[in-house]
Length: 253
Length: 312
Image 1 (tube, rainbow over the protein chains, first blue to last red):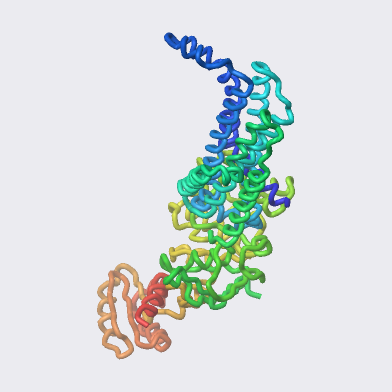
Image 2 (cartoon, one colour):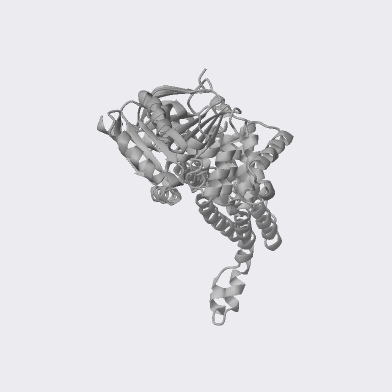
């Protein structure tokens, strides 16, 4: 366990020193903060554009639902982008550079090496969503109304899990391939593939993307739950990490 | 007990047989030169012995531990890859402390060990500088330091000086020579001069097979040339030529070659020729400055062995 903490501490320092943590937190926080602002001010901005008065009048007055929708749409899109960009070179890059061979010739188990990376990504996204969530919550409350805080937390929890599914898959692909581009490409392919499969509404309720829909309905239809999607997403994350470990422990470096 | 014991090690990559039944034993405390041309199987052997690659067949143990990716082996060895890679965002001291943490050293112990090693490899002044800005020689020295963090029983060095300039090579070889008696050093290289300089024992590998393992002096003695070299004072050229012509006619001598103030005499029987030649020289009245049996360089031995293998 000590070795896991040693590796995790190194991963977190790496995220900090290479500015990845900072960039992720800033970008996601910015979108968390801007989403309610954009929802609130969009009709006014459009109305202020010369010739856009009519358009401004056409748009109905913004509601808290618009603010939530804007927040979820922005966060889910950008979090997925970071969930692919951050881990894509985490293992393949270390294998290519030779740092993996160097540190894994020490008593660091391969499982600890991988899980420390996964945990570091989990913490980076948790921190980013925490800050963006607090910013989004405060401005939504200020401009519209203060929403139940527990549901806001649950909404961000679902977004975190959705992000982690793709972070886990990218970590797996980064373990399989020696190229960052291939790892990212495979993750995008899965994202695209699941979107195509998700056209069928029967299947869609079990896919990770349904977590995003669920997070939006938390405030409109709190009684609706998509446990199937939650189970499948958790299963995909665990399976991706397990597969990464099983493959990595047999790999030659 | 041998520090390294390899029995019939095989490694295949598809149809390519990188190691073809390699067997070897390395004595504890020695500096072993693992010599071979590029592609002979040196790096593959080291990767298997350090647990980074799996053998296709055979057995090996290092410091009494069966090879494989396991903590028990990792705790006993140190490893410097051919091109050591580091986390460029770390400083040299941070990196060594991180490695110390992987070996379970506590905060104060790993700081002390890191500082000792930074002094030892001459990186103390730059210990807080990020590794990203290090030169190749500095990286190699840091590579040696990280391999020594756990005071290993067996240290694997893969081509430790091949990519360095002459000054860097000298520094690294001095560091390695300084480890004599502290641990067993297994050093792969294709540079014979490096082996001649620091290694006690030499193993010659070619196409994944061990051609010869011997102490360096035994190896050169076994391949001794039947040649003597005589050097005389500068003003003795004419008598030297005359004497050379005279002994060249003797049955014991195969060939004589005069080169300035020196003459190389190839004989048929080294042991008998030695005494006879010394007597002939004493009788010649030449002012002899040096008389020696010509020893082959390790390079000549190596090429001989490889050529024998090719023609077998």
